Length: 294
Image (cartoon, rainbow, N blue to C red):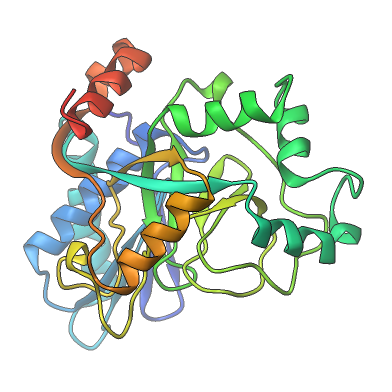
């Protein structure tokens, strides 16, 4: 059972913000996921859209169909149920290949070093140093060795926000650039605060750049087979395992993706937060073994 301390507030005439916790955690994420899943299942008349986040969720509604106070009471009931629900979710784990220290983010870094905390170093060197790693190689290993939870999708269409599945004292944390860039390559693996994010499209950004993936995650025109009919690949609750690759494999995956032939490893799993909390490393090891049939 998760302690219930959700704070509710209206945003304008059509939105109800539900803040599960003041801090980011897997516990608060599970409560948000449970509540938003239940709201969608119930199909409450007047509810237009539900958007979940790591420690909060937003309900958009039509006040002509449901009175705000009636909605608030209904959502409070659902939120109470979510706090008591077992922290178990049926989800999937997928691999996302990453070309760390790639030439494209490296070139972008050079253009915007005056906006960085340490212009004389790379983003990876800076991240490794402030997180206490002796080398970039050690940092990259820590980045890809443990799985990540997709806690929310959006801001820019298709962007997954990922929360590292390790004890809090081991979580990678890096501040954003001092001033944001006006350019970031498509599919950049970025990091800001305690969150990783994958840039679904090319554009502005301020997250530290660690590498790039050849794997499409947002295809508005012709979604590939593993998108399951959606233009967006990632879903809240997904578990992601990054895998380091080199240039040759990067080019091969790009080619396969363009031909519609690339299919990353994806496995259905049941995630239990209680078991995860008992032994994080062993539980993560089991998830990875399921992904690769080890």
